[in-house]
Amino acid sequence: MKRQQHIPARPHPPHPPHKRTRLSKRSGALIVTALAACGGTAVIAAQALAGTGGAGGGDAAAGGAAGGTAGAASGRTISCPDVGQHLRSLPAEAAPEVNRNLGRLEAQTARAFQRWSADPGTRGRVLSALERDRRATIGRITDALRQAGGSPGALDRLSACRTTAKTVAAPNAPRGSRDGSSADNGPFRDDFVDITTVRPNTPGGGNQSGQGGSFRSECGRNENGHNNPDNLIVAPGVRNGAHHLHDYVGNLETDAFASDNELAAAGTTCGNGDRSTYYWPVLRLRDNGRERDADAPGGGQDGNVGTILRPAEVSLTFDANGTEKVTAMPPFLRSLTGDAKALTNGPAQAKASWSCTGFEDRQVRDKYPICPRGSDVVRSLVFPSCWDGRNIDSANHRTHMVFPDGNGRCRNGFRAVPRLVQRLTYTIAPNTLYAVDSFPDQLHNPVTDHGDFINLMPRRLMRTAVECINSGRDCR
Image (cartoon, rainbow, N blue to C red; front, side, top):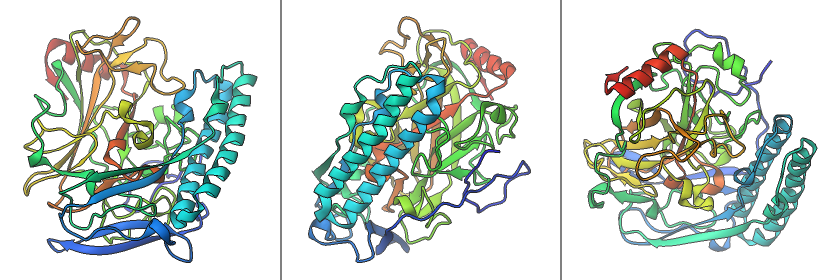
């Protein structure tokens, strides 16, 4: 029987109960300091992952004052090569062992970042221990691939990590945000921008509306509180594989241990029998609210704190992104957009964007927007729409589903399928500090926003979606 971890809070609609697994707490405490108030709402200044003795000395000292004054914003983190993105192949018989050890690599980086944050003077020792642990774990991945006849390539070269820092002048930021130090895990002053100062850069808005018709799946706003820190696509079979909390709509059984058969038999929050899984990291107010996961993996134990925001609106729209007619997606097709590790991997896969209602011709990928009063924060997650025609997943979860070229056409050997656009809006008061959940070492940077999708539309519903898109009709 599969084991699940959900964050209990609100009652779920009738469906088979989820099993919950209690995990041990990691050492360290989450120190949260409320520094300022905006419109009567307290906001968090920073989070320091500290040991019993406090945040440590040296460059862990607190940064700038509250308010929107100019200052230098910095964030220091540990950057490790992303082993999963270097996998060339993943034979089915090797997958459980490989996924298990990829999860260990993420946990090792998270623990190393927390140790270094608690005591900045330990940088050298922390990096040496991390490299030693990673070398052993990557060795197990390599052995599993070779035994299954796979090609591991030069994965052994990916053991070493480094520390990185950024420093940027930031004249505008919500009150309560601060200059960073090695003890902070974000967000920082330079992570925010007043949307009214951004020049229009996206005709048609963040959805980059495709040609032809569309199909919209109505799945709610996660009113039933389906959350967990798992990632069934990237880390199947790994508890807390994401190290941050996900919101789910659609399939009610989605967690790290769900099999295809269990997903196919599950209930759903979507209409028309759509059992697809749609998920994304939660957004939180960085206030002094103690959430239900304050002491849990994926929550406070991984530096994700504050009040979880439920979207004011969730739009899940399929359309055509280009000049080609679309064909049906296969059942159980996995797809993702954005990169949860874009801060250290680089922005190549950072496809998610941020804006405000009324300003959606102004999209930013590496900033959180400060919206004027009466305007909501908007997250736009546009998925790839070219399928290789054979595989429902790939070793790095990307090569089987790619984006079309600049002319809207799929490369040779790929076929156009319905493009998913997830548009999420949030009502957030102006100048209120907020951030997306992230891996601890990704510093809650907005560039790390991402979304995931598993197709479980009934075949008849998929045919309807394809017909509506190709015929120019808007359906739901």
